[in-house]
Image 1 (cartoon, rainbow, N blue to C red):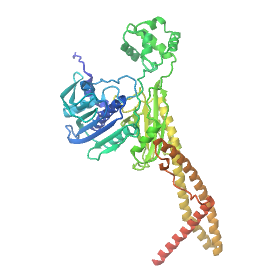
Image 2 (image 1 turned 90 degrees about the vertical axis):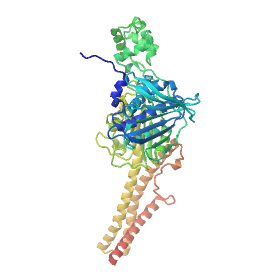
Image 3 (image 1 turned 135 degrees about the vertical axis):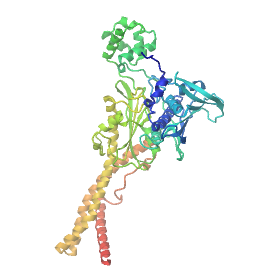
Image 4 (image 1 turned 30 degrees about the vertical axis):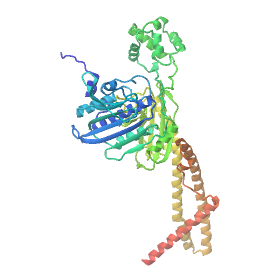
Length: 591
């Protein structure tokens, strides 16, 4: 019989890095960047600092693995800094985190990602993370190389030194690793950075990717999001094994005190209901450290059968419609956008807030016959892989977008040159894997996302209807210009009518065409008016001049009455057609 050995957490993850986002050289670069940015943003927000990040990614050589480059990733922030004594834990130890299980809407949770980035750099380039840190009370900054001791799951600090750094406080972490760079597309670095900018209006970011020019994005909000207090889990979200394990964290306390301090919504009335359902006072007074398995099962069963208040939604952090509206403009010149922020609700006994932004930009060459570009976010972190299995994608595909003016193949994303951004925020988001690439779908969560999308879709439909009416009017006018005058002249030729009869026919045509074009103009004017009202409201959200919002094209001269407009227009149609015919006759004669 072979000897049974015990592996450390670091050893397990070093052999299974694909589980935490390092499944390919392409994803390795993106995941390293994402983990460093997430840590910086979380640190700034928890210290109430407006974040300013500088990102540099460049090729510095040939990678040690086949078909890879040696990539240098650098992320610098203006956060509170890290205590030099904690560098080994933060960058070199798995499951070392101040946020694990706290029930907060933070980006990082488990303390796995940045340690995995250190491990990947160490495995592919023999060197882990290079860190520069300075706290506000430090006169000089500390630099060090941090490696992971795979066998013991501990961080090892090497080459520690002090340097002068002109920052008041902050952290700069650098990784040199094997990888490949993709700038655009679902897995692109630019897509990730733009997504991060979109859902963090308070962020200022400077980045330089490869040989491209520096990009500077200024913040549009000077309000640091107030991170809500950590919330306790709701008892109805637990399984029996989790319930028993959770009790071990509280030591020698009574079952009643464990229920009150370990879970949310266990009030005096809830305890009375538990007793009424059959949970005896003797069992409630018993220490959880002495409870037997059947007693835990009894308590857990009664707890699940007892109605409890839904969890509080105060633990959920929203971006907000106003801030998100302003943030959209940082991605380019907006042709159309619609933003919806839903009030926090309870899905699967967990507080959740859903926000949706639909936009079309003038400076982006999105194909009109291709699926919309989908940006997914969980706790304000872009999700860029495994799109098809995500609750957000399922929700979009379940909406009938044809109702709102977009083409949509069956059970697919809608078609059109739009960007759909959907953000889900919750202290208890359930991911399908440790790399947090996709949100697990439940019926309640999908339905809540659907409702937000439908609200945004109603705004979108107004814009599309206006554009459709505009195109319909142009089509009508083109047909009128082409066939109206030809019809009159042909009838005159066939009937040998006099010039006076021809003139009366042209006048009759003016009336007919005027009535048709008048109706089309009125419909377009009404659609344009509604759309202008919507643009004005959205412009106020962005904090810009409503007059600068995209306006519908003018459809009538204000100094003319509607009937006069129609008659004048029809006359111009006939005149232009005659002119075109004469021009054609002259060309034929010259030939």
